[in-house]
Length: 66
Image (cartoon, rainbow, N blue to C red; front, top):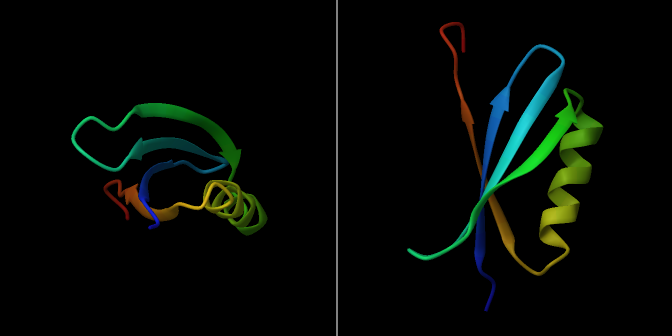
């Protein structure tokens, strides 16, 4: 059975800060790192998170213009 990995994205002009949380009440929450603001970087991130057999579920922080 696949578990869900929740991925939070804090989007900026040039970078995206990434945090991940494991499924469940006691799932670990951690800062994953910062990636470039490019489609290729997001695709690589998605593949990396899915490689562990989990299903990534994304959300992002929308600012006043988002």
